[in-house]
Image (cartoon, rainbow, N blue to C red; front, side, top):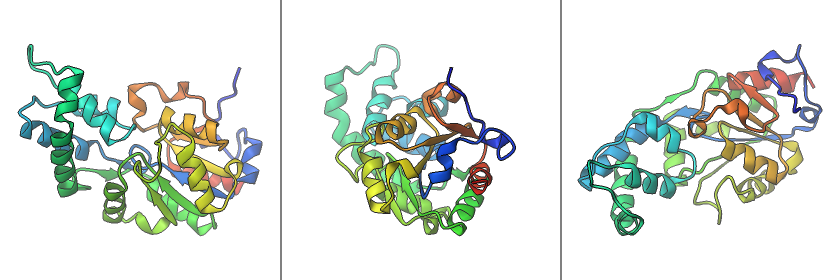
Length: 247
């Protein structure tokens, strides 16, 4: 049976041996650093109103976030129904250009206005940076959305690099974004800790050869986070600092 590591118990509790080799960290954005469901809800429902489609709930959006904007918009269009007003796959594809245009305009207009930094996130980033760990933010959100959001929340200065879902040929859970981010950081994957909130982050990390720690407060497509194959789980990013300090 796989031993689950609760990093909030360390350094007194079990400490994985891999933590002794960590030289850099890759950090996810939505659900890990910032609670962005409010932004998604406003932007997506504005898009749906423009398309004369019924709105969707924040609870549903929380299950759909994490696989990139294109996937999110398609899922929203497929799920936004009223009575018999259901879109088939062909109708969804036909609406995608207009949907993306409305969504992009709406999201950029309200980016960060309905979102909040998770407790301990900024403190954790500051402590990691102070200890000399190079940091990169890697998200499936478009880079043009991610950078203004990090700036608005006062987090952009902690990162040497910010990569989005459009920065590479493929998105998480494909390992390519992590491998390329490790190259940018000039640190080997096995020495780079992935910090995220979902199975997407964990699957990408496992395939790339990175150790991975997940937050307990993120989205994870509505599924229990403790069921995901990860090296540890934290209630706050600040917990990771104490754990790394113990090496």
